[in-house]
Image 1 (cartoon, one colour):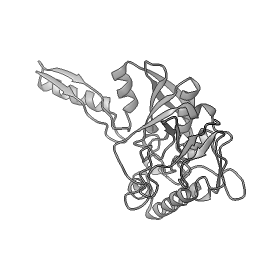
Image 2: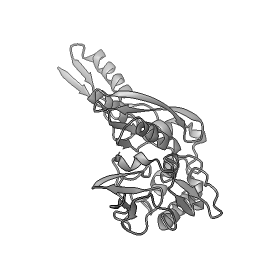
Image 3: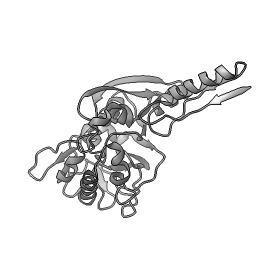
Image 4: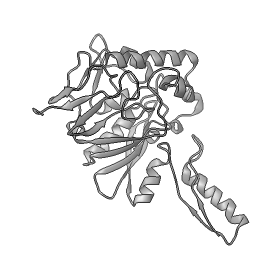
Length: 291
């Protein structure tokens, strides 16, 4: 008898390979003659990198980044055999598993470390990124990620905005002069198994906020902050040199660029790369002929 064990992770408790090994061990005790093979699987959350690296023969790279609550953590990404494609997951840098239950706070938690992980991969020559976005401890709309990639999020008085969900409502302008140039040459794909919109009853704050420790009052503040940023994103900000606006309006941290038909950008921890907000079906920048 041959048995394939392909178990998904148990959020916050056990990764796919760990769950699979336990199941295989239990089966082996009862079925001594069975040939049992464990195959890790993932849905964009914890274990995604390990599953893809194991399946493709890639290599794990470790990077020290900023954790969801500001402490340094060791995150990792997988470099695939082609040498220019990386697979990574938010949970490694900004995940629930990095924060104890009693410290969960989406008002403070940031995706900055995820941006640092992306930046580290890009600096080594990676130009294609597959980013798993499940299992994060954050509801900052990807603002921290954008900051780590060089976007300056400014308050009304011109000072740098803080990090975390509570800072969303303070963003008044975005400066792009410091964005890493190589980002424009990257293609970033998001791996997830949900299609929730940004706002509303099925939106990021209301559906995912409580999972990350948000109280009802926090959910309302996060919803308001995400909504404000969506409405005023790019208003008065400096576009990257050589890029022109495709359509008006888009919330700042969900930056979506296109270059010669190739998409690249940074997104919320809870949304596909293409905007799912029905009011903003597909928004971003296109590189002009002068770029």
